[in-house]
Length: 140
Image 1 (cartoon, rainbow, N blue to C red):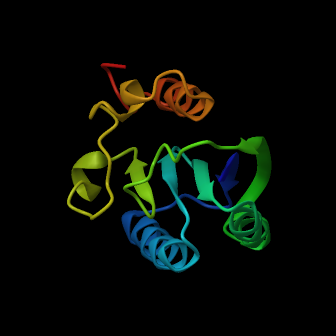
Image 2 (tube, one colour):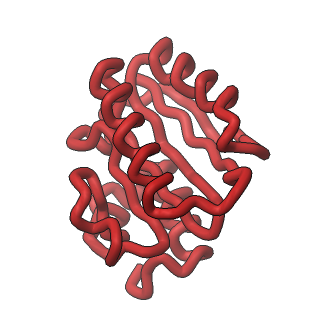
């Protein structure tokens, strides 16, 4: 098992329709490639965790690098992984406007406790910092 976390900036503001399209396509691709993870979006910025085999995670990351909807892509960390942190999600997702997107399958409320469940994992620490710095949750 392997994980990778990156951040990027959207080339233009993403509306609900854009985010739904990204989530739907990501979920389909990730199910096929046995990748799990989490995608957060706030104020034009993305942060994503990808988990799976090293080969599949890197192949997905290289496709993301070529995606014209992103710019300023920065890989934050990648390492071997003993056990998936996001094993239940082909792509968990949260956005700045959770009221509009909370009905989507895979939506994760930043206040749901996921950030505390595996609090010692580096991926959770990075995601928690992103959530806090983008005011996605008042209770973290």
